Amino acid sequence: MNCQQLTVTHKQAWHSATNHPFLLDCRSGNLQPAQFNRWLEQDYLFGIEFTRFFAATLQAAPPNHFDILLSGLTGIKAELCWFHTTAKERNLSLHNALLPAGEEYCRFLIALSHRPYPVLATILWGIESTYSVACREPMASPYDQLFSYCASDTFKDYVHQLEQIADEALTSATEETQSETEAEFLIMCRHEKAFWQMAYEAVA
Ligand SMILES: Cc1ncc(CN)c(N)n1
Image 1 (tube, helix red, strand yellow):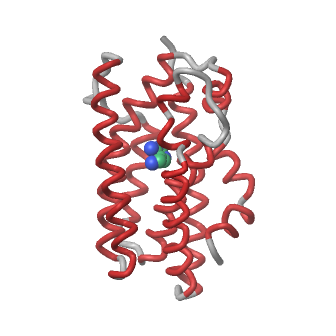
Image 2 (cartoon, helix red, strand yellow):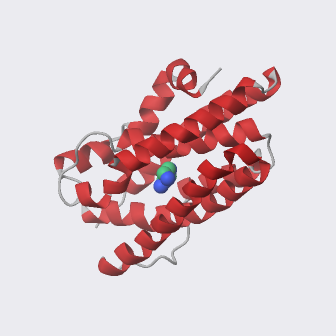
């Protein structure tokens, strides 16, 4: 089993995680500011838990995967700074509580933190990859600027590197760990879909 096979075997779940009306509206320019703002406020909070999950993955990783993971952490640092700057520009607070979809997703990450490395590396790739795929189609202004990093070749290359280390980890994983990875991948896809939906439901 490898990362690409997961997206093919679970085509429907992967499609739902990476194609949502929220994204279609970013492409047409019809997304309302309140919907984007909710995404931003909630995704910042998710990003904090994701950083911890990233650290847990690094902690479990073999040394030859450090380079890629450390460069990913640098990217996350820039992303967290971007949230602060953009929230300020849009007059948003980053101190709201997580809504249920975000809270459940974060709980999933916390519970996963002590699982075997192949599970962590694959879910890490999956989470980053959803945004690389989701932002692949051109978006209308201002969303083209706001999601420019996820749409960039730099992000795409980084996600490809994550795929390589996850595939390497999966190659030597036991059948039991591979099955667990597959089950968690499906759950992750459901959380991604729910997260888009939670932002989409915001009204001005
Ligand atoms: C919910 C969610 N999933 C994935 C990503 C990509 N880092 C994100 N920012 N937010």
